[in-house]
Length: 435
Image (cartoon, rainbow, N blue to C red; front, side, top):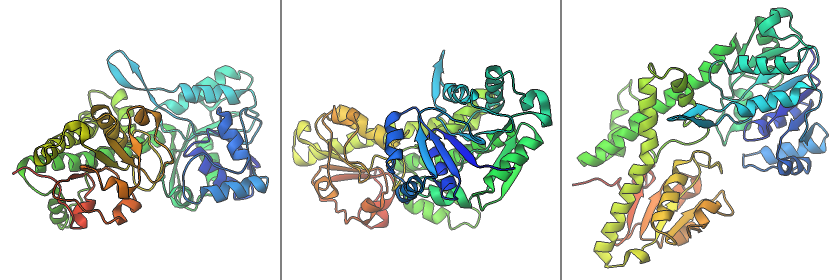
């Protein structure tokens, strides 16, 4: 099997790093994206997202002629689909998986497919999505045979291999992590595993497409449930006057206990999304998974309520008018040390506070040069950490290294809410508790 030309459909947080890693192996890679700005940016050797070491890798790949971006698919040996899988609303359900991007990607590549091609779906998807993808391709190209009908001897091979990387460390994990590869047939699985072995040093574990799809959803649902436990404990501890950070440290001294750190919620396009894919397909059997989602989705609202309570404390302590109070939100990304705002609870908290305290919110985000329009339209301002320390209420939402390392001091007339345990660890401020 020879893979001389690879086409990556979707040049976002997963597609672009994957394309760059493959191109760094001296293989021709064609990146396809419907956003012309993205295409132009990459062809100049630049990037449109923040990821450590990615800029230099993309620049080298473009300069050396191994990576090129385009808006229209061209012929290739392997087509790697890495497009979004958001939600859509149907009836009373706001969390129905939206496969329209995958369908559009299939139809865009169908006309350039050739006998012997391999099509891999990397987008996180509900169980059965790979089979739907194969069906859409077959409907568009009736002159080719596909594995769901022709079995092992099909003209086109179709497989699923979910990404499982950590933003901020994507380039390393794309290479070092094990990959779960599931084809519609054994031949599809084997061919896909051989392809990934070109750049993956981890083990490529072969299974079927449905199991591979379910594996990614299970991994993130497991993490979501464990985070929900930590978040729920933080709320309970607040009600009972217990320092949740000290509690977790003590509980984790048990040899079989490993409670995670609470936060302002759960964000990103994986943990906050994937559990709903399971719940949408097995609504009666996924009670724990759905409950965890509700707990984590509710946490930003709890944070907002706590901030409003702290504002009231400031008003009582200082005699200020509410319109004169400043609230500083430290961090907007969904996790530390990246610029990704997708499904970010910190962003949700800051947005709601900017609506409540119009023109009174300062936001600190070291990975952004300007605020999203949704925040700036409510009068929120992007400031540095030193300016943020002048605020009346400090809300620590993301433990970026720049924020963790900053010598935050909370004065007697200031109030702070630490959702990540940073100030407690630095012996500055304990998680607020009643009593």
